[in-house]
Image (tube, rainbow, N blue to C red; front, top):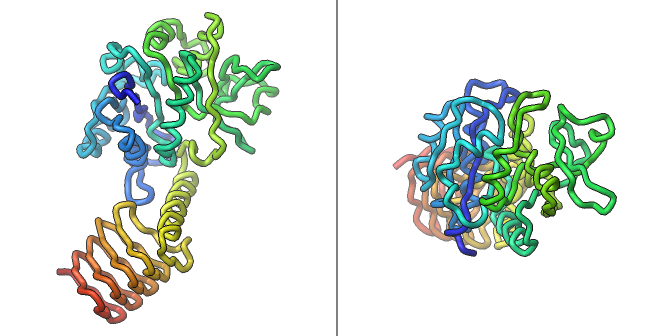
Amino acid sequence: MNNVQTRVIVLADGKGTRMKSERAKVLHELFFAPMLHHVLTALAPLNLLPETVVVTGHQAEAVEASLAAFPVAFARQTEQLGTAHAVQVAREHWRDCRGTVLILCGDTPLIRSETIRELLAVHRRSGSRLTVMTTSMADPSNYGRIVSDSAGEILRIVEEKDASPEEKEISEINAGIYCVEASFLEQGLSRIDDKNRQREFYLTDLVAIARRQGEEVARFYCPEPLEVLGVNSRVELAAAHSHLQQRRNLQLMTGGVTIVSPETVAIAPEVTVGRDTVIAGPATLSGMSSIGSGCLIGPQVVIHASRLGDGVTVGPFSLLTDCTIPPGHKVAAGTINRE
């Protein structure tokens, strides 16, 4: 992958009215981090963070401050005029790109590095100047629908508020993730208008513009709808948290860790756990903790920023913060320990 020829735009400018919150939507936390952090973390293994610009808007200062640890640039959308306008605001960061512009949403915390890598590969193999990520949902409400011809080729994307009753029956939806050749993005944006019910400049209009110019629009189909779930409500926030928790626990169990009642155990991504350790939930492990091999973590335990040697037993109802527990040590039930 030639990262120099790939630029990334992450749209993180929305307020998120359905969250019923004064806080910017992308700053709402799930699974130990704001949802926007999860999106940027997915880009990190691809070495794309230095080529990334985050478009901020609502509570821009707070959003930008939260990303101090990420080597990204920022562009501010002072007026909320739509997704195409947000990309245009970031133009200074991609206008000299001679390759691909990857566009992501900051409210899709379940997106995986592997999926982004595959999307870029499919886009390059297709030779298309525009690739759209799609998926199918049993209830596609609130998502743009993919309108295709009889051969299955993408014709256009219609937003929910502009869709006809027939179009609303379409189950294939737009995931809001695109690969666009920079040369086409430049000219395509100049042809987008706000003649729609929301009076916004839709980035999705790039599809119809490409087709009118005789361009083929490639499709990257994501078979797992949850991965591209846009978090727009507290209910969706909880669902996304649960999915990340399950994903992490599955990774640990596959690696030789026993987790009793995994739906009650939350283990942060940065925590290491040795083989043959047994964790009896409910339990929360966070803050760069390291758990040795053959440990027994009892129920109702919280461990934060602590180091446990091999063979440590932690009794129920214990709270360990900034602790170092030597190998083979037994922590009595109900212990509250801070070094």
